[in-house]
Each structure stands twice: as structure tokens, then as C-alpha cells.
Length: 324
Ligand code: FAD
Ligand code: NAI
Image (cartoon, rainbow, N blue to C red; front, side, top):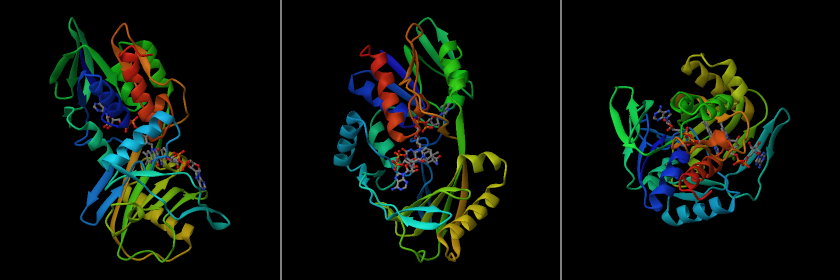
């Protein structure tokens, strides 16, 4: 059996790895140059920044077992930030005893480790699926074709899955229904460390949602690098604001939230995630049209967290293998 997985985020990689371990031949396709999708890291001369997934938690027992294995492989480690909540009243220390995990030395270490020797066709944006006698042909945006594959798993964010699922109207409709919310992520490198004993904070006022000292995570460079994430509502209102303006605005908001004067910046970049997170959790697990040999998975089928995406990918593999 040959399977194509479209999307090298954690959902697609989870599906591909589970199939690979069952002895199935799998190829992964992604429009980006690397793997990881929203579990993404930016490498600069000023050190790295985790611009997507910040950390992840593990609640499901199968996922917890997988995370233990990843720790043994050295792909992830626990992160114990000095954690705060910031609201109109100020800063409140907000530690809890929940384990939080990060990829080491950057988030993408996990996607790289999990892909291992599974073939990845990067920089390949799939535009169309064509049904032929032997299965499915994948057609990319340069009109190059791949396959045929007997089975296809679409593991892209919901809006990007819709055109690929057109042959299975029920799946395409579900993907259409699964709205996704945007978010801005600003990477800012300061000249010197901030004069504050805080590694990360959930922000509950103003445009910010989350701020984090990237260098507080294990394995990162010591550069004073921070990642600032906007709320979905603020991103919705500023979808077309120039990136530089967004970056400056969110850095100002950081200064206000922390109540300190910030040092000079050495690096500043804003990334717009059009499909940052699903608007709501679902209990779909994965979507299947077995009569067409077509499947879909992703965080939008479960929950907008790394764990939800991994579970959804595992479910797609299990349904395809007839284990569910
Ligand atoms: P994705 O990671 O989006 O993967 C889909 C892949 O499909 C992408 O690589 C994309 O390039 C590819 N693709 C799309 N269309 C095509 C096409 N036509 N052809 C080929 N390839 C295509 N979760 C947490 O648990 N903790 C956090 O702290 C956290 N923070 C976050 C912060 C931000 C800023 C964002 C954006 C997300 C965050 N999340 C967090 C959510 C988490 O990152 C996602 O739930 C998870 O990574 C989704 O994985 P996925 O595989 O479903 O999708
Ligand atoms: P989690 O359990 O640490 O956080 C879940 C939510 O609980 C947080 O958003 C926060 O509101 C609250 N919370 C948790 N611990 C807290 C504490 N000590 N003090 C105050 N509030 C606390 O992690 P989980 O459930 O795995 O979620 C992962 C994170 O990913 C969340 O923070 C979520 O907002 C974030 N996320 C961000 C996205 C984005 O685009 N910025 C997209 C998807 C998820």
C-alpha cells in the first residue's frame, strides 16, 4: 500500500509515522522548505525564536507515552518557566505544577526527529488531487504530478484542506465549517536581558495574549530573545497592518504590560499566522471517506493544541489501517 500525506505539521507527521511503523510506504508533501508547520522556529544571527507553538502539555495517556519516548530521544525536554498572569491590576505570579514540554534545541527538533527517514517532498504545494485507476495523483502548483498513491491523507489547516477534499463533499463541508482564527507573532531580540524576573506570561489585557523569553527554554542561545503573541481578536482587526507597525505596537504593549522601560532592539520581525488556531474544539478525531481512500486530519478535527493535532494524525492512520 502506498500513502501520500499532504502537510508536514505534527498531525501529518503523526499519521505518517504511525503508518511507517506499521510497514506502510509513505511520502509526505509540504509547501514549506522544512517540516513542523505551526510548530515552527525562526533561526537568525541573533539566535532562534519559536514563532509558532510555544510549549505543549500532555493529557492523553497515549500522547504522554509518546512524549516520554521523545524525551528519551532528546527531541523534547521539560520547561519550567517563571510564569505570570498579567491583567489590568498588574503582574501575578502564576506557577502551576503542570509539566510543559518544548522541542530541543528548538521546536522543529521534534518534527525532524519524528520524520526520520520518511521521504519528505518540501517546497511542494499540492494544488489538486486527481483520481486515476490506480489511486490518486497529486498535482502541485507547477503542474508536476506525483504518484499514483492508493490512499491520501490531507493534513493541512482546514481552509487549505477544502480544495483538496472536493471529491469527498462531506469532508470538504466539515473543513469549510471549521473556521480558523488568525494571530500575529513578533520575534524581538534585545541588546541586553530585560530587568525583570519573568520567563513567560499569559496576558489578559490589551493586544497581547502571551509573552515569552525564548532563552528561558532549554537548549536555546542566551540572547535576550522574546516572542510576543497577539490575541486572535487583535489580529483580526489588524490583518492588513504592515508587519513593522505590528511589531512596534506589540513591543510597546510588552513594555506597558511589564511596566518597565525596554532596552534597544537588535532584531524585530512580525509573522502573521492566518490560520493560527481552530475557533472551537471538535470531537471528529479524523475525517474519513474510506470508499475514496481519502482522509483528513489536523488540530481543527480535535483541539487547537499540539496534542490535539498529534492525536488527530494518529486517528487518521488507525482508521486507514482499519483499526477503528
Ligand atoms: P500545521 O502545523 O499547520 O501543518 C499543516 C502543514 O500543511 C503546514 O506545514 C503547511 O505548510 C502545509 N500545507 C498547507 N497547505 C498545503 C498544500 N496545499 N500543499 C502542501 N502542504 C500544505 N499549541 C500548543 O499545544 N501549545 C502552544 O503553546 C501553541 N502555541 C501556538 C502559537 C502560535 C502562534 C500558533 C500559530 C499555534 C500555536 N499552537 C500551540 C497550536 C499548534 O501549533 C497547532 O495546533 C499544531 O501545530 C497544528 O498542527 P497541524 O499539523 O494540524 O497543522
Ligand atoms: P496550558 O494548560 O498551559 O494553558 C491553557 C490555558 O490555561 C492558557 O491559555 C491560560 O489561559 C490558562 N493557564 C494555564 N496555566 C496557567 C497559569 N499558570 N496561570 C494563568 N493561566 C494559566 O496549555 P494548553 O492547554 O496545552 O494550551 C497551550 C497554549 O497554546 C495555550 O496557552 C493556548 O492559548 C496556546 N495557543 C496559542 C495559539 C496562538 O495562535 N497564539 C494557538 C493555539 C494554542
